[in-house]
Amino acid sequence: MGMVCAIIWSVWQRRNVRLFENKKLDYEHVMAKAWSMIALQNWVPPSVQYVKANFAALVIDNLGTGMGVVFRNSSGVTLASGTNLLDEEIYDLKIGAALCFKWAAEQSGELGFSNVIFETDCKILHTHWNLICEGQGMSEISYLDSVLEDVKVMIKGTGSSFSLVRSTANKVAQRLAEAAFGYGEKIWMDVVPEEASLNLRSDMAAIADQ
Figure (tube, rainbow, N blue to C red):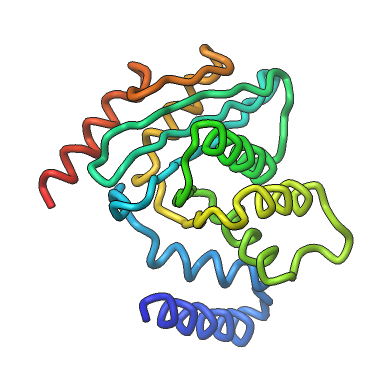
């Protein structure tokens, strides 16, 4: 119900912008606004049967694209975490995020996780994913479309899903993406590296307060 209300409000806002400012907002902008209104602000554990995978990408000019992912269970306990670095490969942020999504899906398969809830704070990526799932990608297949189509195939039949959260609910993954420039490609079992430990403890404290 909350999503329906958010979409209605966003469409109404789109109408007003077009009427009073003579600007036309595209579908992606409207959906991104709707999702941003209801996206989780704090990290929330998944249901018992699920694993939650938060991922993030960081693009730094002249250095490359850093990626981070953390897998946690319904108690908030870390099952695995990882970093990856595309050294000297510079992408548009949404491409970097899409490649990170694909890498996170690959890691979930290698670790044997199913029923994974993937979470991102990249609104553009999430909106484009919804378009792809509805068969409304680019008229000519773009690289972004191609990467996301690969992810669709990878998670098909696994019970997995993809959700948008606020930046504040994705801090552990963000710290891991930053740390990727030092660690490169690395996986940790049951823990996160020191660089992300403070944010992990903050998430756990927030869970305890609920």
